[in-house]
Length: 527
Image (tube, rainbow, N blue to C red; front, side, top):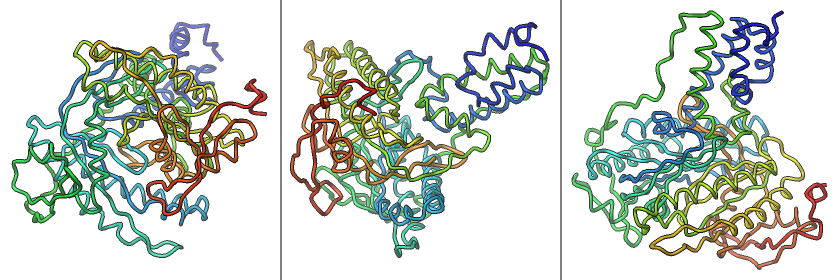
């Protein structure tokens, strides 16, 4: 057996060993290090190529086509049409299958992925770029060269998606016949698209009021319809019938014939690069191919939380992450004042705003990972951009709620120490609001099984955290009853009475998180 330090090929492997540590399963890493033979190096190359394809499917198309330099912020202004969708009826479906354990999780995942696969196909054929999954919702961007074409493509996509929902109008479950329906809203405007973060963890975000307005268009919509803002309506040139909806919103009447609506606007976008053909399978040739593939994989890998990346690395051969129903802590952190300020900032102030958001994202991610949590992503709400954070989804633990509360207090301190950037020559007022819950979720790899997808969490616990965040006042952390029960002995909380949250019929008690208790050492706190 040859030691990795005894020959030139092994020295080359040693030169890239550090880069391979987080991207190889432990057994493959050990085998290649101990025996860097062509056979083992071929296994390494095959694994990295598979991982590359998986990661391409985990990020928006613009990232995989224009790879970033990890840790380097980049931003640009874009004009486009943003389309939001949201599902109605998912929570009863989740509850109907949760009692069935793993079998129920598999049935629910199959149903969700049939829905997502159908929607993603329509989006692609309609010239849309799927930017992200937000739970069971989707955010899509349309960027045709002419503004009216963007809006019309988005409307066509929304109508096709609503027609496709007929498949899910009657779903048989152990709790009886249930359904899925969908709201669709869209808005045309300008926004900043940015890549932010550190070499270890990057994020792809949209900043500006246009994102919030598009989300509000979805909220103002009706199931089976497509809702437009006045700005989107003003750009339409194609003849179509509209009806008034909520104030300043319009609903598209789907009286298109099948021929008029058609199946697609352009041909399906190609996402994957061509698979290279290996001609040189010597040790030197394989090492060169491994290093070349690393240069493609590393920029994509930094867009995933480290623990999620590790899960993908370990399951790459199976190409499947088993679904589950863990009970976890979930938080939404909304930074108020920063994302929206790009609309009123002077051109020379935009970069400082993006850098400040990058700083906040990076520091918060560091605080979350230090305490064993996952900053899933920056996502979007009608009140602004927020960060979805959770604890326990991969390895549930009785300290999940404690660590989550401790992290929210640490985030509060971090935000208070960030130096706010200037807008119109004056420092902005940077505040936050946080919703924190504890309860069961559905955790799974959702999307198109061999296409655009991501590992995510869904369910009422997630929705309640978002609604608590929306209910919070500036610089307030709100909790639901299960979270308060879990942390009351170690943290100071305040009972704020009851409130009826969106989507709920009965009032629910809410609490504010004030501070840690008398125990300050983290080891003692989690004991």
